[in-house]
Length: 174
Image (tube, rainbow, N blue to C red; front, top):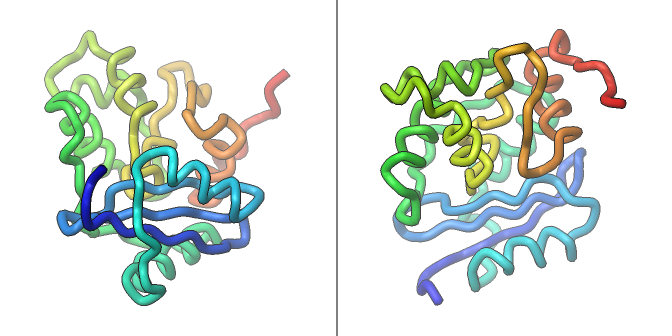
């Protein structure tokens, strides 16, 4: 497996989050889970890693905690997207440009990368996003204004959008 991969799991007000990084940058984030063990298992399923000393991700850990607590936070971090296809890279970089508290549609992202007929492929690329929150795929919704999908569960997508802008409180799904 990859050498030099470091990871950390920490508690937030929403649950346990996991972060992995390499020398190239942040590699993976596990969104809040109900237990430390669950976050550890999900992080370990992605790649073998060595537990990081607590200070290694200090700034990122604190910013993620602040974000989960509803504070606006920027994520200028270097990212390790070495496993991404050129299409995924374009989708993810475009998605990073969506401002905090705002949403865009899958079709908008497709248009921004000059692939106007690729809205479904954009959704698939976002479904493979290894860095939710930093690459804010939760800010991408359907053209009709509904949430669309989210690999971490639609409830978490709704919660993340609501953290950023209370006006995004979507009605419960039936």
